Image (cartoon, rainbow, N blue to C red; front, side, top):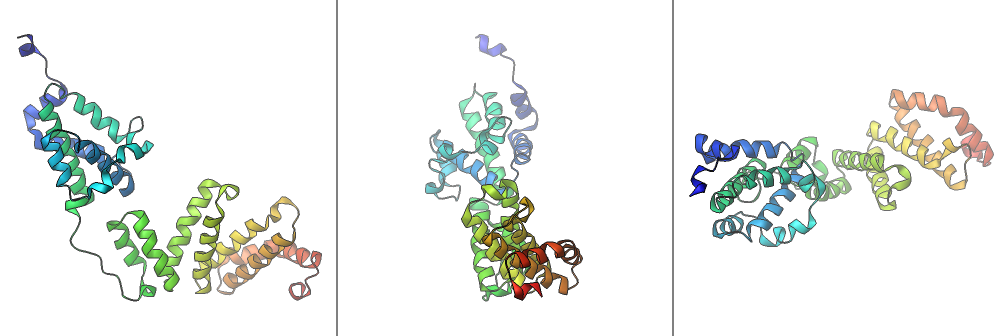
Length: 288
């Protein structure tokens, strides 16, 4: 009896006033603004489907018809990440809103599924995946920046990396540059001393691929990388460091020969250091 006088929550009022379709559209937009990458958005949806498969009949049907294989979302909640379920994140926002509909479990499930569905549509996940598949040249060495942009719009980063690794190794300069830059960003975030050896080797590999094809920025960046690896900035240098220093000088000269200003300037600034190191290690070939 007393439930007849229960005051509606703000969300219940919104649904009553504007309809559930309008309300879920607004909420989906709010949540989408917190999904800062396709990877985070996809993890969010996987967790939502993992929960939905254990919900009421309508929720289980939504999960089953999502177009995303069950094996991808089963257990997703256990593999969450702070960007999804951390404080102030998208999962917390949706959960808080759903609590406003606790008095009507069926409405709450419908609301949540509709929000998830609109987010899936926005990011083109599952049943909303675009049927217009990007076209890649049969010869992966011909992949250009335009192709890379198309791939990045349609695929998650792991798939993008897989495709571009093959393209770079096939001879695509743009793919090699893209891979090297992505790895370089990761190295900068972690710091050179905290980077796994495999990551350093991959970065050097892709940067060298682009540099060997004459990409001047890659030549200068590779030289800078070798300079850092030489640890000459610490005031002394060992035999291993000297090998890196020679590689740095080599690639600075390559970039400078193409008129790259920063490489020309670096060579000028480092000339005395290079000369000293060659004399220190008795390297007559490079001393001349």
